Every structure is written in C-alpha cells, then in structure tokens.
Length: 81
Image (cartoon, rainbow, N blue to C red; front, side, top):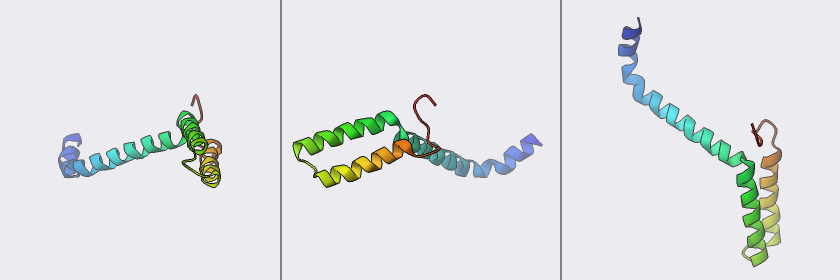
C-alpha cells in the first residue's frame, strides 16, 4: 500500500512542499516578531532615533507601546522556552 500511495500522491508533492515552506517562513517570522532580544534591540534603536530627532515623541510612544505589547502577549514564547 505504501508504494501505491506514493505513486498516487506524487503529483501533489510540489503543493505539499510549498505548503511546508510557507509554514516554515511563517514560524520564523513569528519567532522573530516575539523574540525578546529583537524587541529590546528595536527599543534601543527607537530611543536613539528620538534622541537624534529623527522621530517625534508621539511616534516613539506609539512604536514603544507596540513593541512592549509584544513582550506581554499571552501564549507567545518567552526567554528560555
């Protein structure tokens, strides 16, 4: 049965590969989006930008709130997990 199944599902292999690849990209993006070290780095970059006058205090506050909310979102992986 294994050989027959392999023969019958072979035409779907490219579809499964694309699906698997898309899932890997999504997983990687989510890890980076919620990675505390990446968030801390972006917070530091924001602080530098506001200090140098590249962005306003209001822009800084909005971006900071967004980044800090990522750190506290329930169900997201934290350091060491």
